[in-house]
Each structure stands twice: as C-alpha cells, then as structure tokens.
Amino acid sequence: MLLPSAYAAFRQVLSPELRGLFWRTLGFTLLLIGLLWYGLTQLLAYIVTAHPVSADYPVVNTALVFLAGAGLLVGLFYILPVTSALVAGFFLDEAALAVERTDFPADPPGQPISLGKSIAYGLRFAGLALLVNLAALMLILVPGVNIFAFFAANAYLLSREYFEMAAGRFRPMAEAARLRRENRGTILAAGAILAGLVLIPIVNLLIPLFGIAFMVHLHKRIAARRLPAL
Image (cartoon, rainbow, N blue to C red; front, side):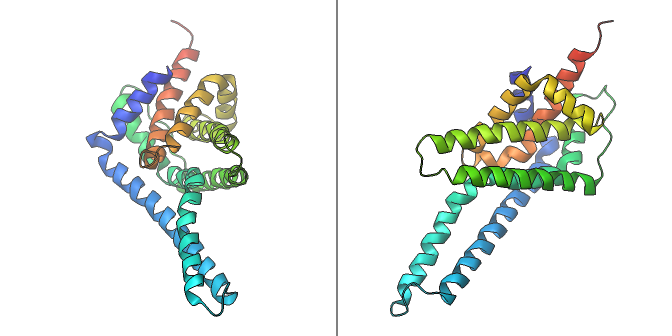
C-alpha cells in the first residue's frame, strides 16, 4: 500500500498533466522562502546598524550581517515544512482533483474545500510546524538528537496534516482524523517518507505537490480496504 502510493505520486508529480502545477508550487515555495530570508536579513541588518558590534570597524558589522544571512539559509532548512504547509493549503484542491481525475477516473471526485478554509488549515499546520521545528532547531548543538527530533516531529506532522487534507475532500474532518488514527502506523510511515525527503536538498522542494498526491493515493487505498466485500 505504502510503496505503490509513493511510486504513483512520484510518477504523477513529474507527469505532463501536473507539470504546470508543479512549476507553480515550486515557484511559490521558493518565493515564500526568499521573502522570509529577505525579511530576516533586513531585520538583522537593522539591529546591527542600530547596535553595531564595532563602531570603529564597519567592515566587522557588514561581515556579521553577511555571515548571519548565510546562517539563515541553514536555519530555513528547518522550517521548510512550514512553507510546505502553506503551499499545500493553497494548491490542495487543484492538485488533489488532478490526481483523482488521472489515476481514479471511475471514482467520483472529492468535494472541494473552500480556498479560505484550506488556507486557514494550512496556516494552522504551518503554525504548529513552526513551533515544533523551532524546538528542534534549539537542539542543533546536540549531535544526533537534533536530526532525530527534526525527523520524528515532521514525520508526525506531515503524515497528520497531509492525510487529513486529502481525506477531508471525501469526509468530515472529524472522520478524517479518526481514519488517520485507525491507520496511524501506515500513515506515520508515509510521514516518515515525507520527512526523509525534507532532508534531501532540492528534492525537498517537491514536498507540497508530492505530499498531496501521495496522501490522495494512500487515502484511496485505505478507504477501499475499509469497504465490505461484495
């Protein structure tokens, strides 16, 4: 169930049917990361200008801002799941519908979640992911523990939120959450795959679209397994 769903999602992300959506989700993800990096570096520059480390050697302050900006690129790696959540919330219905029409043409499509509701859901996910990943970032100086904490936290978060967003097109959110809990082992393993991809540079930029496609397939398989045999 897990590997066929993952394979189908990878195939679909790179398919001609989703190519346009792929470039839009990728562009939006890079835009959010770029805006966040720019805002934080400007804030740092303002702080250093207002409270310079060395009034006599301005080059020291410039170097500090540069090094801090470079360090922020590493820090942004830890909050990629946050931007992923926002992007997924924005493109949820379009991506899920494309997957359903392509790979499940005989099944009725899911009911679209309103844009406002899906973005609000994405913002809730993003806020939770931000808190969890900031906590993991605080462990950055503890070898081994930091990566494990980052991986475990995001395996849970990504599995929970992506599955419930996909399942929520076919059932009330409370029922989607109950279905996730009933299949927590399988869905958590799916989250571990997503969390593992987050650790791979460049590939991690595919998470929003891949995560939606992956969980649409997984939900379809789980739902079919629950149906009584005829």
